[in-house]
Image 1: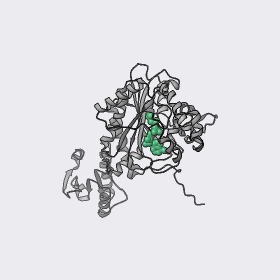
Image 2: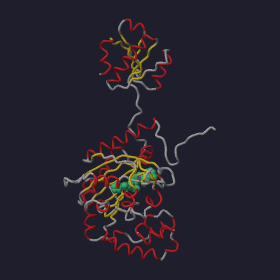
Image 3: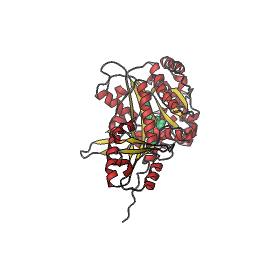
Image 4: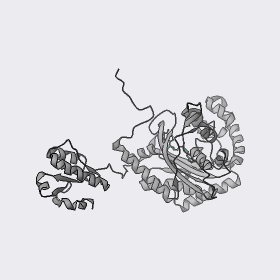
Length: 418
Ligand code: HAM
């Protein structure tokens, strides 16, 4: 039988021709996050299922439909992480990271898993970058958290995106708002999708997040959350905007943002690239003041965001931006026979131990084929080790851009590292 193996649906390989772009996006994110005082945290890719069920909310699509659950050999239930916030909070509590009473700022990069219908910008395994700021209610930190994301995208050179912000209030505001929403949706209850009918009972705010066109249309005309904020939440939202202005983050207010996870309170935001089609959110986040306590920790406020790298890459490609570069050898060593090959390997090893990318292909012995390889790999220089050169204890160095050639004595080989 001739079996042809393929990647699982909704996943993809990152091939060497693209890997450098990912390295570039990741390293720049690390740099920007660190400049805002965030420190890296890595959590496992699977957790006890409850970590997500208790945090994301049991009426959300993520928990109801999209989680990869499995049992281990002892019958314990785990889930591949669909998002990074709940694991970070689990770790924050478990490792007592807030014990010094200071603000804890954590960032992460990692693969997440959601069983959803794959399409451009939406896959079943995807890589997220995110920042969580834990231990403060101060609205400055909502703005600062948004500014990390903003600065990252600006540093990448991205232009086509907008920052949309909203406040979804606190449990106090939600009480009134949920009643108003239920009154509004009651008239259309019969034509809502079955999911929305159950959301109506269990969690009316989720009605605003349905993707079924008919429900979406009804939700578009629903009362705005912003009209039902209590005084504390109104002040908070005003302050967030004041700090965003000081930080020079351009934003618009969009009262329709609800977010697909239940742990949010007050500030909610999304970074949108309208050229991306239906999966147009580069990322999103918000404040989640109740989550640490809900997951068994002390009452600790927090705010955070996450973005997806694949949508970011699509955006960078659309705008023709990535400054990373496919690695090219500094030196390609050309050798012709057994004797010169031993010297070639010595020089190769010397250069690589100095951290210099040098290449040599032992099976190629003609000048023509090795020069061809050096061109194909875009080597900066070739080192030519002919018998004549070796007999004089020299090597020839050719600059592949200018064609200039010079000789270097083998006992001055350090010059190659300059
Ligand atoms: P989220 O909105 O579910 O939030 O995901 C954040 C971003 O991850 C999305 O905007 C999108 O760019 C990317 N993403 C999500 N699902 C997929 C997918 N199936 N394929 C490709 N990319 C995807 C969260 O995950 C929250 N944990 C954000 C957060 C952090 N809130 C507070 N702190």
